[in-house]
Amino acid sequence: EADKAAGRNHLLIAYGSKTGALVYLLFNLVMLIAFALSLFFTETTWQWVLLLPVTFASIKISRDVVENHSDVGKLLGSMGPNVGLTLISPLLVSLAIVTA
Image (cartoon, rainbow, N blue to C red; front, side, top):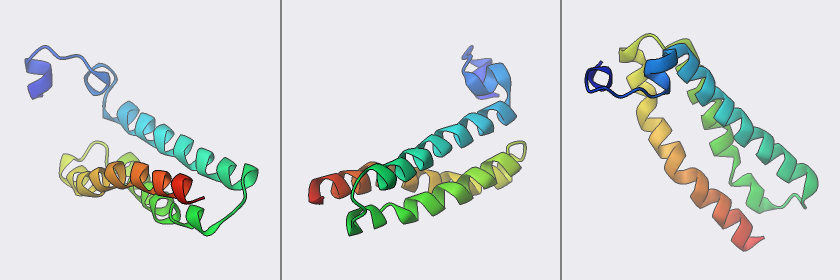
């Protein structure tokens, strides 16, 4: 509501929380597909195992966001893990690439 009152018109305001949740799910699905393709097209080494926690976390967070998109109170519970996922994903991918 604060964004709307200030004249902002981003995805959530323009199309609603359900669309925002589905876009979030799409981003995580793309990440999972990229992870699966990297396992298929590269040597499967221990480095890629580093990405398994990110994969499982993204599945849980995506499910929570899609199920609770209209309940801000429940959605807030996904914000912390989402920030953690956002911070740790590039770090783990970089570690996997550098040590491979």
